[in-house]
Image 1 (cartoon, protein in one colour):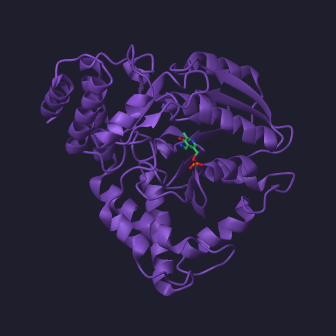
Image 2: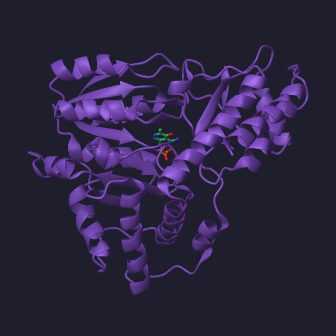
Image 3: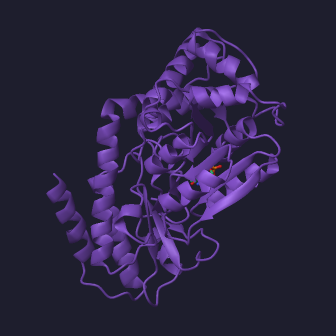
Length: 382
Ligand code: PMP
């Protein structure tokens, strides 16, 4: 139950163990083409250009930055923590002048102050981390990308800990790049960088004055490949991770069968059950309010007298949790991921294990109080 890699559906895992087809075999071309179309549907971005490239989420971030940013461009980083800092590092590496709209850990950005910066800043791009995995904060992505759109600024949204878990309507909201990785709510083991890029962002890439500085991250290399596979033809730039692409196709098919709205609602429902349990145990969450709390993970302060040793006790109870990640607070909190195939059984098993681990660590609570709170919430949600 860490915030990625998460638990994967057996059908997805079976695709990884299947015989590896040639990357130019007709059956693989059909699978890759369908996965690209499905990615567009999952991101609710019918006009966007999808990219599926071997690499992790950091490569997805790099693809966005390398292609949209040229030396001297100005970039606004809406900074909610560790992964926003990484985006800033990348932007600087590609020559951007970076301005941060920085939030204290646990806080979400104030849209009005971001808008004030957009008004005065002459920015080319604005980046937002939809869910900051280091703090469990959910950014107001819709309001932020709409503000960027009003100011003609390209928006890049890091959905690594959000895509297919948190509601996101790329095209309706006007987001330019939605990027993610395979190993979280997309439901595929680590190894794929995924992006959907709006026509406006593709036009900005075409209008570049300078070549993209990275070869492996250059859209010029990847666009013909993605277009070819979608058109039912093979093309080669670098060998695609055949089995991972097959697994992606299976998972995206499952996601679309569940339906995007139903999937977002299930993640919200499971998150509410976890929150009810944490409240019952007297645990304080890192995000400062319910409205800025992610539905894909919980970040929780250790209670008085408890420290990271409780993670070992949780493991003894059968549940793997994650420690803190935010540089300023990392020894003071822990994280519980709840993405992808998470259901009521996972909620109750996890909450039960956390209760037992906390009890073993000396935290006092009425036995079963958290399980009961989660169950009550599950029952009331139907
Ligand atoms: N952005 C966010 C929000 C993340 O949570 C992560 C990874 N946890 C990344 C980017 C980087 O992804 P990866 O570790 O797959 O490179």
